[in-house]
Amino acid sequence: ANSNNQTTPYLLSHALFDTAGQVYLGTDTATTAAARTPYQAIININQLQAVNKSLSSNYVLGNNIDASATSTWNAGEGFDPLGGRSSPSAFTGTFDGLGHTVNNLTINRPTESGAVGLFGWVRGASIRNVGLEGGSIRGRIGVGALVGILGYDSITNSSGSTLSNSYATSSVKGVGDVGGLVGISHKSVINNSYATGNVEADFNGGGLVGQLEHKDRKSTRLNSSHKVYLV
Image (tube, rainbow, N blue to C red; front, side, top):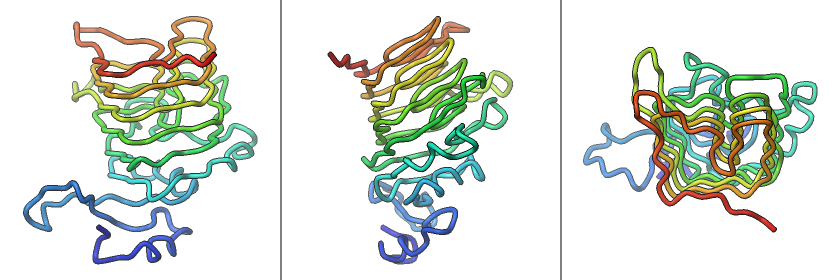
């Protein structure tokens, strides 16, 4: 349901704003309107990039996103990963794709270390129900198609992140800690997710996750998640 009874055409009319408007999910079981969680709707690639302006908010995709234009953004570097390259600038909100996809995304940042992917650094967050189709992701260290670094904050000792019901078919390339879906994962959970894209790395390369960190004996859980190899 849309906030304040907004219709889908109303949301579409806001294509030039940072988000298309506020909506509520039908799965929200809160018994009062005040207790319901608002989400900001995203309907184009510019609004998706604008998530960097508010990294602790909740978002949904209102439709499939054509990201082809990112191949020429930022002097050829492409899309700027959501959540930055370090924990203090991490994405900490909720992102629900509602089954939609982001198509033909380009990130070309081969000298950047830290966290490179559609989402760069993710901390104590939830990402779900989204697909990343086609395109190419290139970084240096901590590179994944969907998430560069999925984890927690060692300073605040916050909880890990959850990635569920998601996938990527993008090609991914980096020097180390490179994964088809996630570059590095620490104290997090990956549920029912997969990757099929080609992965290139000099060290710590994985079809699904490049590196599963296990400090303090608390590692990532992979539940019904896998790499699908294309022949």
